Structure formats: C-alpha cells, structure tokens
Image (cartoon, rainbow, N blue to C red):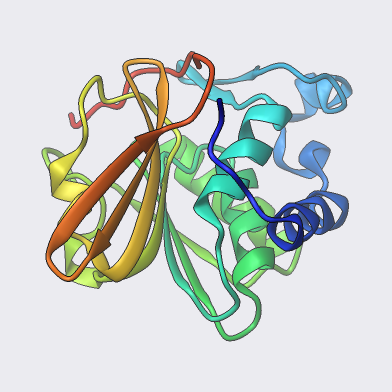
Length: 196
C-alpha cells in the first residue's frame, strides 16, 4: 500500500503540471514525445523522467509555498520548474546537475519560460549543495542504491527528501535530530546517481 497523500497536495501537483509544459524542457528532436507517459532520453545518458513518476514524487515531497528546495539531478530543468511552481514566489529552488551541457540547457529553458529558479553545476565528489543548505525539501531524480546520508545532512529540521533507493521510492523525514524512512508502493527504474 502506498503512502497517503492529501487531496490538496495532489491538486497542487496537478496545477503545476498544467502550468509547466514538459515539451518546453525537451530537446527539439524529442519534443514530439512530451505527452507520452514514459522516460525520454535527453542526451549524455540522462532522461527526462516519466510524468506519472514525477507526479508521484512531487506528491510525496509535498512542497509548501515558501520552501527552500534542492533538485538533485535536475537534467533538462523540468522538475526544477515544477518545484518552482510549487514553492511559489516566496520559495527558493536550486537544481544541481553534473553534466555541463544539461546545466546550460536547463538554465536556458528556465530563462525562456521566465521561471525563478536556478541550476548549479555539481561539484565532483560532492552530493547536493551543502554550502546552500539547509533545505526544506530535496528531490533526487537518480538512484543512489542506498540512502544518500550526505543529502539527509542538508535537510532542515522538519525537512523531507524523496529519492529512489534500489528501485523503491523512499521518503525520508528529518525532525528533532531523528530520521524516519518510509517506502512507497511499487518499483521504479532511474539512472544511477553519480558523484564523479
């Protein structure tokens, strides 16, 4: 059985999807696949994740207006844009991506769409953006194979991270120095999270 998500959160995620067009964050040669509920290759061994999977991750993440959000593995910038819609004008959304060409692509797409978020180049051997922490929410769009403790350390008190871990969608909540992990129903396939 899956983790319960309230109706208001589901509706906010639906509204974000209606506002942020996936096609605007795909390379021209694969834009025709934007409406397909499947991952789309965007180059450099990266994918733009399946919309139904992204929607579920965002429901589980439950971003609130004004949240500080980190998007790990921002790829083409689509999830970063969705998170910016959810966090609203008082929020801060930072994507981090290891592929320089995707950093530039995502930045360009965010700028064209006039979305107030930014994408940073990942630092070799470092997960996330510890210098910009803490974050209220962290979304991870690659599978680390184990819980990425270095990212949990970047959560604010009361913060939440959603990440695939060995195929299981894992929700990690940090509160009062304690960490609670739960797994959603189903198995998911993501590209591996790399630190190099």
